[in-house]
Image 1 (cartoon, one colour):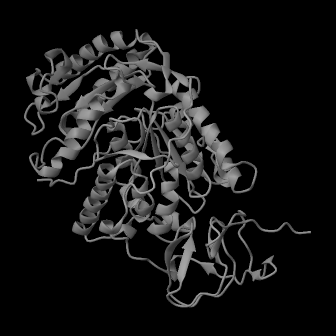
Image 2 (tube, helix red, strand yellow):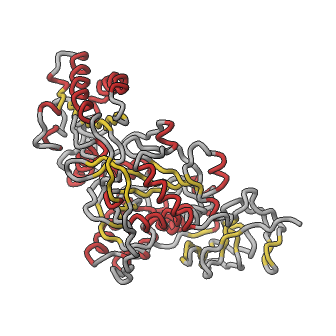
Image 3 (cartoon, rainbow, N blue to C red):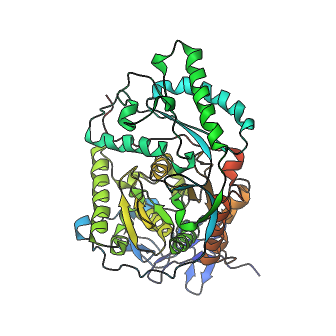
Length: 504
């Protein structure tokens, strides 16, 4: 007897289900006593559970994700061409702090092995960070970095080198109001806890973003000014010499037992599909709740992937001030997109749609599942440092690389990254744990995916069990006991500053 195809319906109110089987569903397949597929439907895509007329609501997650553009027969495939995007909910109408979750039971005695800095913050890596004040110095610095890497065998307790190269620093409107975003991002990246409280900066000498603007008290021993050197080789030698002094100190650092409350974990998704919102993201949300219960700081982000689910988040704000800040960040991004003559639905990619997501509303409702169920205690503007323990919303663009950079500036020392379509994304500055939403991706990319949440869709695991696996791996990776695949292969994406200010 043929095996009955698997379908997932998230909420009893939903009038669609998504197809679980990798091979999809063939036309004519009897799915239940009153439902037969009238056409082929690929994995992850939606099947209509009822006849829909033009303008009828299409519901998933118990929320309206769109309106039928034309008549849709029961048992049909609902793809993006059949769905009209609903209007975004007006921000001024959103309730704030009306359903603040009660704190979950505290998890006592949770620890990991981390590198404690003099300022009290704790790192998960022990790296040499080298800041640049302008892109002009990148070519010289990269050559110096190659020389420094050849010296690393002499410093076995140093995990690596992170040159903070970027495309900022000159040719920009440095005093524009929005220049505060890239400037504070660079400042906060440079003082990241995984750099051990050490500072080395490379400057050209004539750029707009002079070193003292980032760090007014920077000492000569922490700065190399290329225009002060007598040619190319002295430039390289100066960088290598000052780096060696810092490497000596970093090499003496050791891990110590630290409470989980010292962790700052970022949550992100990329290459999302329709499974992301029912497998990987909810599992990460469960892990986020465990982290919050243990006292850690947990950041979730991506404004355009939150905007259409923000009405479910503002009631969870811990107080009125936090809720209003959340709405303010949404409004700023609405204006930012409008200036670029696009709307929020410019976000979904061809891969998202191939994976079954019809629009940004459906994508957002799945994305916010990463936030778990805790109260939101703080809202950050792009590149701001987190100051509170608990669940924090850090406003960032949804671009993987820009979001990752902003979250690093906000202080994350590890990131959990969910994906349905697959991406080899990685960060040098902090470990990235990859969570797959589908079994097929986890099997195909077995040497890139760290945890498979696809087992939730097939009934082989639960959201809670996979969430516990993610939490356990976070502690093991933070302690240096396990290595993520991205770190094992040395996969790292470049730092990518968010600069909404004018380039001159």
